[in-house]
Image (cartoon, rainbow, N blue to C red; front, top):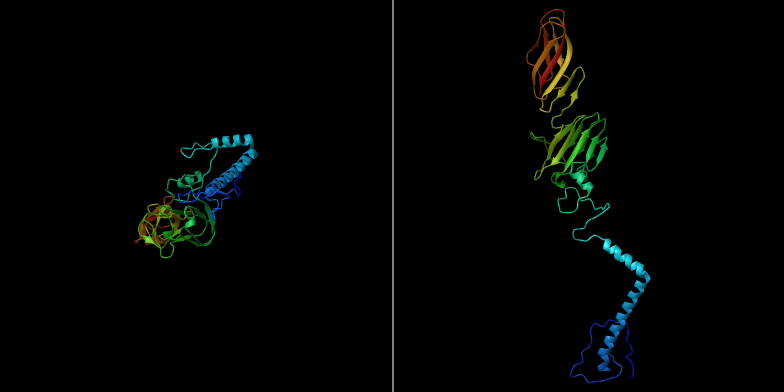
Length: 312
């Protein structure tokens, strides 16, 4: 009695089924030639058995290398993992910070939440002109230059709805903010190609849903709440009203032409002249213009006076 030979460690794809028309032939099986037909299925099963034993021996060797302690540690480690359904994390797990304006059901990191609560995504100081891109949306730009410059906004089509850019002018020169190309900026009373942020003022520009222009949301550039608080100065108010003041000496029976510290953009509504220390009566001559007015003295000796002009 002879054992089957050529029982290599091979996973046979199938086991031959002896048909009723096959002759019963013993001997060494050969699936290629059909020799030893009756033993071909036994050879195929033997090969599968050898292959399975090789796999088991390799696995047993790996387990032996790990050892009982290693297997126990692996089990403990797996037991310590959070389940996929309703995991309860401990410590300080981290997650990727989602892109700005993401409104999906993905997990939000604290960095994402801080930005969503109104904190800036970053800050940049600039002393000269710069063109912003969509990557700059959500950031704060501080202009510190001493010479006039221009900031060009990103192309509005590249900005998600609700995207905003805040610009502070802490420099000593006026800063122009331009729309990208022919794009406009809505000031609330019509659109314009650009706005000017004077020193000490700020502006926040927002892309509103379905809008094709930037919207000026504040805080102060929409009103230009600039001021000069010197002895001859002015104050612009959020409503657009402008107060201007100075002190002067009006000659006896003469006139004083007051050139305002700044030009009224639309009109001067009223000029008030108050004598200092009981001087002569004063009155305005004619209708004040947007740049000057005339103050007349009704008596001799000349008069020191406080002047106030109101306009817009």
